[in-house]
Amino acid sequence: MTVSDSENFTRNVSYYIIAHASKFVPAGSQRIASTQTETLSTAAFKTPAGKTVLIIQNGNSTDESFNIKYNGKTAPVILSGNSAATYVF
Figure (cartoon, rainbow, N blue to C red):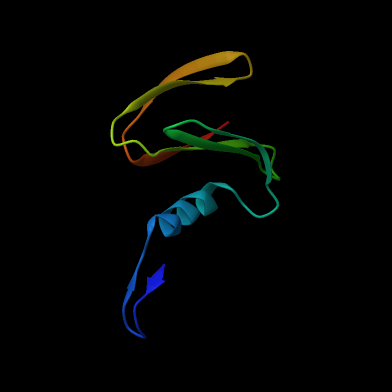
């Protein structure tokens, strides 16, 4: 968040990413994996309840196609440009 003065501020990208992640990754979760490509950033977490949470951010202005592999299964995904998505398993 950028604070201009005592009454004005601007929410930046980091503000929204943290807000997004905090909805799905509770306190006590552990990061179990992360990857970085030219356009996609991922982070996976194991929650205290035993769920796996995968957050993916597409930093490209165009849609990106990729596969999510989990427990021997594969799911094809298309993520819109300049967006983020969360998957809970």
